[in-house]
Length: 166
Image (cartoon, rainbow, N blue to C red; front, side, top):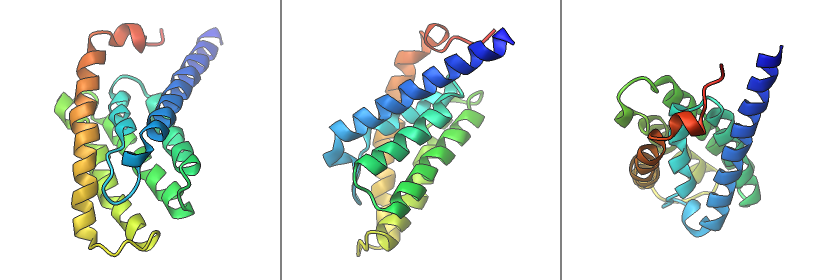
């Protein structure tokens, strides 16, 4: 019983901290975080499911709150947050594979989903394939470059920061 309670508290604390950091990073860097050309620095955190499953709900809730607080429309709140959730789940599933595969799920899920929200939700007149490219480039910068820098910084301390539940 105590083990389950410890797991729950640790899991919730990690998820809440990740969500809070995601929201703060998104809102502080809001001019870059929204629109058809976006580099959401908080998306670098999508590397965290490699270290802890608590990052999955943390990233989802963080993205959801960021989209709500950022004044996004309902389809963006729903589908943008789901894109981050899908990316986080698949990053977690790839955690034991090559570390360079970890940023791919959030890059792909956002590049495939967000342009449709921009086109049909915000009526952005740009072609969807072009927006897939622009959103994808932003995600490569956020997840691929910054996320991997974060990965390298955290990897050395993973057992201290993301202590496995025993």
